[in-house]
Image (cartoon, rainbow, N blue to C red; front, side, top):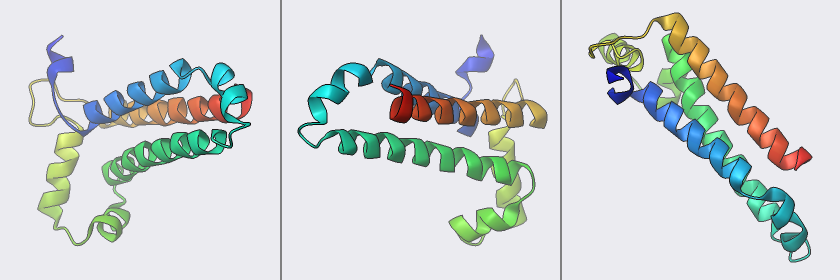
Length: 129
């Protein structure tokens, strides 16, 4: 259980993804839609849900790109950074400074699963609920 007490970008991504999925699924879209649509507020809820998904997705994608060696994108978004700073960020993603580090493959798989969960939740909320 000590692994789950570690703090870093990967645990933050996991927490954000779980919160988003819970908010989307427990939001009661089937009950809210008939009430909010006549008032013209359903579009606002849809935009909020999309915006939250976009922010979480962007954060995960930036770390995924950095972890896989696409440092040009990272520098383009976050400004100039030297290799030592990028390597330190990679180590934080993989919990390299902690007692229980994660392999690069496991981190990639976890981030891809989180991205899939966000996309599936948004599609369910926007089109199927």
